[in-house]
Amino acid sequence: MNKQLHILFLCGWYPSRVLPTNGDFIQRHAEAVALKHKVTVLHIITDENLAIKKQVEFAKINNIETYIGYVKKTKNPFLKWKRFISMFSELSSKISDFNVIHVNTLFPFGLFALYLKLTKNSPYIISEHWTGYHFPQSKNIGIMQKMLSKMIVKNASFVCPVSDNLADSMQQLGFKGNYVKVPNVVDTELFVPSKKSNSIFTIIHISSLIDAHKNISGMLEVAKKLEEKIGDFNWKFIGGTEDQYKNQLKKLDFRKAKIEFINHIPQQEMVNHLQSASVFVLFSNYENLPCVVLEAFSCGIPVISTHVGGISEYFPDDFGTLIEPKNEHELLEKLINYTTKTIDNKDKMHTYAIQNFSKKAIGNAFSELYYTSLKNNS
Image (cartoon, rainbow, N blue to C red):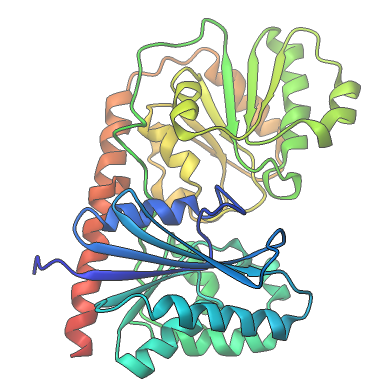
């Protein structure tokens, strides 16, 4: 079946004026689907700077009709939920004739999808990226959220986590459903290999720079040991400032190595940094399937990553190295190895990214699930 459908993206996370980069991976999923189908996005978010109770913004962004509802901040959870329901009712009344609902983040927006299925007989699928379903973070999920999530998953046509590892964690919580893994999207026309490279050994890390998650402090300790071993090199940390690491940096007192912190930058700029890197490093304590690893592959840059989450599910042996979390000695050893390695499989890495993570590949994967959902729902 190749019929064009109208897909309603219900998004708990999505870029907005409040959080411009929040859920940008969901936006890329929407853009992938929009290659074949009409896509309308519905997103609701609290805006603490909002003077009035609510405000609606509409824009057509990259061929996607995007409705964002802003609601006034409140510390009362019941009032917040009431405002979200009211905003959902207002926005959904503006969107008609959709065929399938695509929920992004199971809870709480899955409740809106369940409501639409019960009232309009609209099938829905769920994409999930949240690391919070992994133990021990999952201990923070309340009883009510678990109960409602089980109901949402049970009524979904498909549940599409970005990795089998995430699917396992969700099912261990009792979320029984029809699971089909669909990974994140990479703009493989933007993230391409380049022949240019730095004359000095250059390491790159891109993330939120949250230490409990990404273990930035551990990488800085390794950087000091690497300086003692090889002298000059560059290590770029992209995605935030060095503010919370100033004391550690002062203590480590780098003399030869250049440690650079770069604030969040657009993807177009990020590509330039990736293309000129010798190796990409991810030293996280936990993950699902980070887009940045896949983007490094698409640029033909080898990756040293901790063996966490679903990363190993999309990690060919000759594309880099997997190491144990918190193992600074192992990270140092692998980095030293890469100082003498020549990257000769850039095109192979890029082709792999096109086949598995391009907008076309992901759009086709979701299309099959949409058609099957409609067939099974008829």
